[in-house]
Length: 288
Length: 328
Image (cartoon, rainbow over all chains, first blue to last red; front, side, top):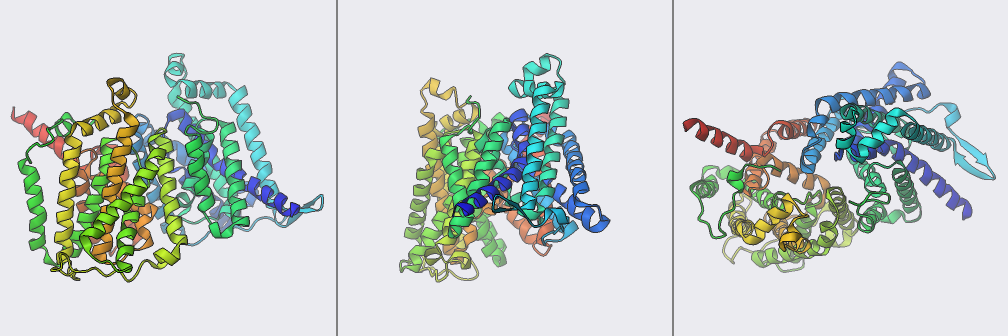
């Protein structure tokens, strides 16, 4: 019984880690630019397909595809940001929602056209398959790997935000973009680089998640709610909030599917509505 | 939402119907005679148009961005459908029940929606929509689940007109209901109440300062909108004599937003024009692969947002202003 509980917790944390990697970019861009971007999952899907195609058609090893997935999604992010997104920073939320739903539809149709409607599969390298035995309990090796990656990413992000000059510029722009621009910070450049970074992380998450979340052309729609939830519950613009929200969601979803399979997606939606009512500005959001 | 002053300018609640408005409704009647083979499609357009008008009430006028409006449409559809399945097939009272179902769901959820900013509203409406969808899916013993609710059989309208396969009754019935509810919506948005909604949309923080109870106003319009959306759902259930799970689905809410944005928000007629253009385009392109339809739909959305804010009717207004400026 206790073993089960630990196993469910562990799987939940691994699942939450994935949600965190994918959503953290959305959280930062939403906090930075106040842009409701429903198309964030499309960048994750792009990273996932980059990984799958490189592995199956070019024979690139799995670990080497991860940086490439990051790069592909980041490149797509910066191109779209410069050409389309940046024109809509001042638009209403409705227009941003419509615009990004349009992008999602195009991404879904484009992916179906390019890769077909079925699930993409990758074969993980041997050392990531199987189980790891710790203290009499079995843990999936891949999930241990996932959690490790997320710990590294989180520490790197935190150090970047707290220790580097660019991180200081990002924080200043989140707090007050107008004042930051007045102090000589090139806010547009900060926006663009942050957007690319966020998209890249989503791409990395998409590639990491093929084995856990699956990958098919409806990916951006299927998981849109989850990514938005991480941001909405965590509060836009905070890493800590996003991390906590992703873990809560991941554990609740896995536990719900394990202990109450007949309730299905119910648990996550009830949790979502309840949390949004209790914390309209998110767990760590600033109340305005 | 910086729309031109001309279409948005306040009018008196009892303001006369202008010539283009009368022409628009005559056109809807004329379409019945001009395209006898397309009356079923026509009734679907009218129902979608009504649904879009209800979204316009909360989105275009009160500024509530909702991604879950199908919840009320579905509640109405199931209410009307279940009523006939359990032996009461009278259409007009069925619509009243559908409206009541929509209103109940709308009023119950309005308290969650009026608090919070855009993002929280987006999430809550989305969540409620998904929740109802899951509920209808799981409660298959009531709703029929994924198979849909079968056995919906309507009595004759007023005991005289049967619902036929050619859609004759469906079209005129839908048109009549649409007109009545549209006139009601038109009266609401031009009333002082409607003006206060626009004030809330433009600046929700200043409205309390002039004595406007923001939360109460929003709850009122949200409930009205939900009730009318319920009627639209009931209409669909009655005219198609079937209720599928898709009445509650997320794509229905998303498509509705597209319809409204395409036609133009905050002007009531935008929803009707958008519904006609969207559904006719869908009908004409239906032999295309659905994947390509989705691609073009996405492209259309991006283009409308980037270059044609205000949708079709916004574009018409801009043209009108330009030609008027040129003639001066």
